[in-house]
Every structure is written in structure tokens, then in C-alpha cells.
Length: 239
Image (cartoon, rainbow, N blue to C red; front, side, top):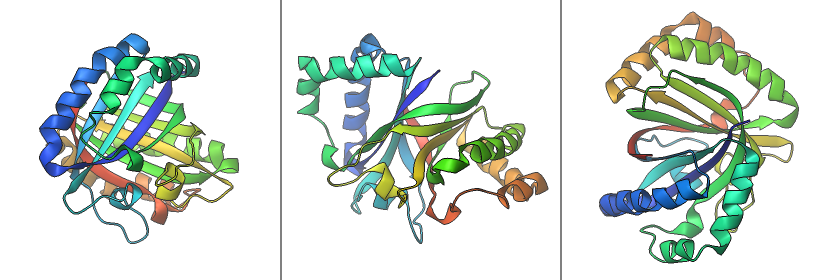
């Protein structure tokens, strides 16, 4: 089963090109170690929230931009082996010494893919989401997203991925649990939607929000939507 390593971090706005280069330069090494696809996206439409939001999740400063990114692995075993290799590879140490952002505030974790609805088209724009779902509501959440994701794809999305928290560590400064104020009986879900372009995304969401099937499905959501964090992101690196 496919496995996801998800990341969110805050990068100074004036370091965008440096971050892109840092990520692109690192991609060949990650692929060598087992990553099938690496995607880095730059915050473009990331709203402030009343309870939670992406900026608060990584304690972003006013001059910083939220980055939403992920690695795709063919399975968990490949991911585990890759992480083990990364810990002992001197190239990773050199890379870590030259990061154009504060790595202590980066949040990360491993996620099992619950569902992956895709067409194969490359992402031109991404909606990223993180939420907390009661552990005993996994099946209910999967059933809900089967309905909502069908509507989202019908209105233009090229891919929708839902990934269930599996190896999500607690952090000293920030972490995924704190990002969505997850309780002890809740699991973090890492999710994203791919679109052909921002225009397609904006047009699609207008139709989605007006679709009665979406409103009906979401009225039975088995989680607290007020603690969900979300935003729109422009791809920086997709390799």
C-alpha cells in the first residue's frame, strides 16, 4: 500500500528561490533512497483561521510563507528503509546544514493512504488540508470522503488523496497534533487535492460549494471541521 511522508514548514518570503533550489537539488538523493515522487508547494491562498490555521501550525512569522509538501513511497517498508538511510547518509547532514528555513518549526509524519483518486495529470495547483478524526471513525471518514471526493473530481480536480496518520511524532516546538489540536483519541489526516491550474481550482470550488450533494455529505462529517486547516498552494518542485 502506498505511503506518504507529509511536511509543513515556514519559509521566509525572500527565500523562495533558495528553497526551490534546495528542494530540487535534494530530489535526486531522495529518489535514490526510495522516494517515488516529491512535491513542494508554496503558500498562495492560505487564510487565517479562528481556531487553527497553517500559519499557526508552524508558528509562521509575518515575513514567512507556509510550504506544504510530501514524499510518495510505494509502501511503508520503503519509507522506513529510506529514513534509516537518510539518518546515516553524510549528504543529508550537509543538506541539513544549509536549509533556508527554521527546521525546528517544521512538522512532519508518516501516513497510510486511505484513498487515492487520480487521473495522472500533473498538478498545476494544490489544496492542502490537515484535520483530526476520531480513531474509531476511520471507516465513517472513508465513506464520507468517497462521496465528497467524487463530487470534487466531477468539478475538475485531477487527484484527491486522503492519508491516515500512522507514524506522526510529537515535536518539541511544533507538530501535526498541535496543528489541529488533536485529542488523545484522534488521528491526524493529511490530505490534498490536485488541480490543473488555480483558475480550474477556483471555478471548481464555486461549483462544489453550490452542489447539494456536498452539503448533504458534510452535514454528517465525523470530525470537527472548525479545527481543520487548509489552503491553496502553487507547486514549486514536482519530481
